[in-house]
Length: 123
Image (tube, rainbow, N blue to C red; front, top):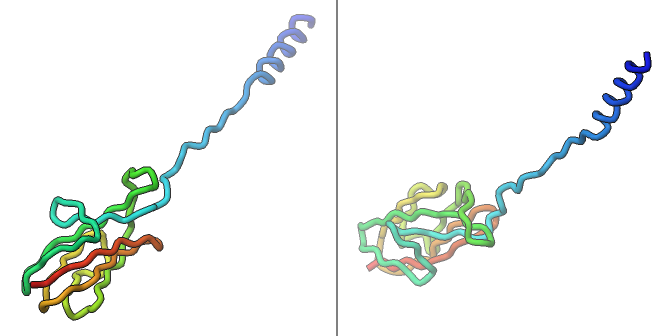
């Protein structure tokens, strides 16, 4: 009986010393900025030239505050004025921007309230 009591006390101490540790792994960081690549080159808002009838592929990518890649989701693209270029499709990470007539247009890619803005010159 004494051995049984000692065994039960030992088991109780063993379980009392065990603890479950849960670590929360860091999740994806929030989108801080949208960058746009035209072809294989990242572009700023300085401007891109497209010929009338010509087109270029624009690709949006997301970055967090530490410049790590994060999902950009499905950005919405727009052009002002809308009659200088055509953006196809208007939603998505990759679009085609086609020159319609000579002039300049401001292009915006927006995802989750974060925007990239650039200017396209159609010649």
